[in-house]
Image (tube, rainbow, N blue to C red):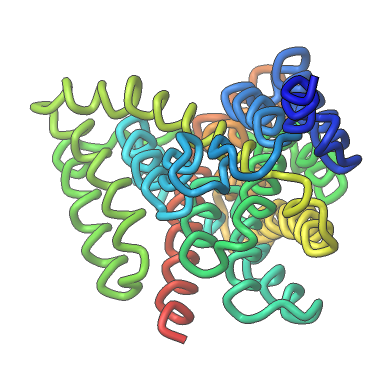
Length: 376
């Protein structure tokens, strides 16, 4: 009976906490949103189940928890804390991204840059709430709506906030179809939403091959902190566009990115142990993330309207919302919003330009923060 009692004590009877119960419910909600509503299921389902894994009550010292040194989960979590997984995600993104939509209309790059306003506004808001410079930089990158970038930067600058930042970033990425449409409609008129843009001009193969090489050199000469993320992104794109490494490109955009997404999502979810996650800091981070995402969306839309004041070829301001880095979900949302006004208006072709520019922009923003604060 003593042995039986000791066995019961290592589980829920001896280690029950209301916080763990709350996080188990949150994990189930994440899985439900992914399965029932198809909100980025490739992200929410692994993260949601990871929350279940990380919040089962157990006695410390069993060496199975994600924060117990040497456990399987702890070793896999090293890919998050050491920043290994995000560059591999960027490699896959590069191998599946077509930058020709951006190269055919370079002015749309400015929309991707404008959407980064949410990053720097959140940075200042975090400072106002008492976070340190390094913590504020890690929180601010949530505004780019780029989960891998947020994880990479927080692992370097604020590893103690990594769980909250990662979950916030991926949560808002998944909720793009819920958050962005009301903001777009609030800031645009029906006449603006009906604007039809000229078809994109073709881009030569030579330009598509040269772009990742030239863009990498130019960006990293100015922002060396972005070498890791942009290096893997543009290398993956070169594998795709070169035409001689299709096997490598196919592996990067399929098997490799799928494996890393599974590990990343599960580990991020498992890191949300209630004792570490349910804190006032986490609440602030989620609130700041919501504001930053709304500001990033609004920044892209409003900048498109400003550009129309000086341009004969009008831009449909809806596509400004695609300046955030949620590829390609944000571009699809722009298409959905535009199609409700005009079913024959195919905005997704144009929206992909600021969308992929936003990926580069968020990586550059992370590089700026890393270059500025990593030595401080």
